[in-house]
Image (cartoon, rainbow, N blue to C red; front, side):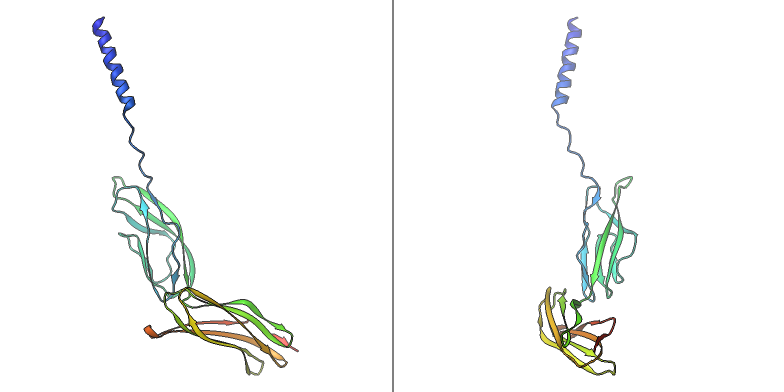
Length: 222
């Protein structure tokens, strides 16, 4: 009886010790952390590293579905997206990830990447017939890291090919900056197509960036 009691007491003590032992923290889920990518600027070098957590490094990255903008590539061993693209696009790709465990863990994630022009020009207020002429406003933007020596000109070309200047600007456009430019003037009767041109010069790199807008339909002043 004394022997049985001793066994029960020892067993109880063991159970109590097991209850006091802290359980190990749960493992970090294996996943791709990056969900947004900085925009790529056409004609400029791009470099961004995708991030992951959990699992057993080293990792192996892949494109499971879709394509990056032409000129950009995903490095399988580092998760770095790099290169130079010359196109404007907004693409969604499915990125795959595999770790070094046996058997390996896997993860996938859809990521959107946007590439934009190095010089952007858009209508802030579309050209319109007002009072005695054509008036409107454009917005010019420099998404790059270089300052531009910018020249902007906008003309209205009538039905016989004669051009009338609606506006002209020459100024420095800082990196990551935007500038609104109003335009307009009185015009004789006629049918006009409006052309807007912006040219950004980077003297230090002997490079030129261009952007252009044109109205889809003639504006007719009677």
